[in-house]
Image (tube, rainbow, N blue to C red; front, side, top):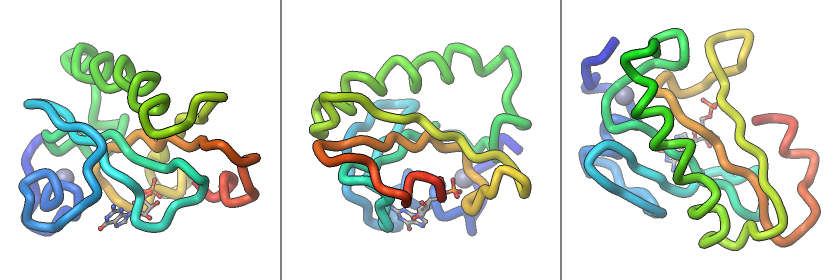
Length: 120
Ligand code: 5GP
Ligand code: ZN
């Protein structure tokens, strides 16, 4: 649950073992561009600690989740999503989660958002 897994892709990215196009980093949070973007601006914000998804989160994580959420507007604007954006969190099988390390997708950009938005 809270333990970084050796074979978790996003834990490996947050440890610097796998490269990413970084958007933002601090002690608790990392943001990086999605390798397969669904919108002109598509990056993810993750906690550095390993939480699988929101099933793994409780009130003990509210400050961390608030910090993540509180960064999104600033980061979206810096990345060029100045006219609106979506935030998507996929959870579990029915939520079509592919990577089991909690992440908030930020989707936006200067163009009209395409149908790829529906995927994430
Ligand atoms: P999920 O369906 O779990 O919400 O989305 C996982 C996302 O992670 C997908 O959009 C996928 O493109 C992205 N992704 C998977 N592996 C990597 C990777 O190694 N690097 C980056 N930057 N993104 C990844
Ligand atoms: Zn992880």
